Length: 83
Image (cartoon, rainbow, N blue to C red; front, top):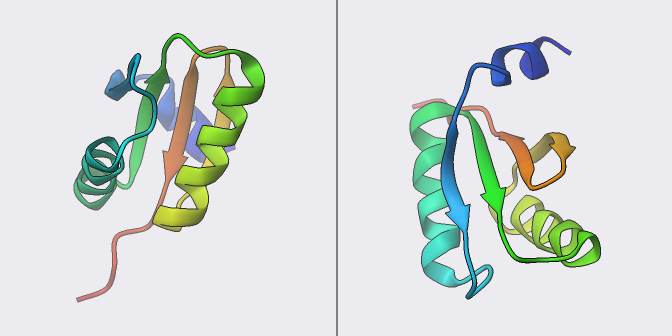
């Protein structure tokens, strides 16, 4: 709940466009998660089922957690690794 509150003020850092979830988009999401822990992404041009599949794929491949998903916006969280 606290993370959802923090995410309200964020703007989408990554936008998934017409080519869908490519390796470069996954890499960009990974970089954003490493830098910020909590990010918003926008998924354009996909129906609800495709968006859900893409979010699950991101969650599994990047070991991130979906905090909130509404419409085209998804909020992801992954704690920074301890160094």
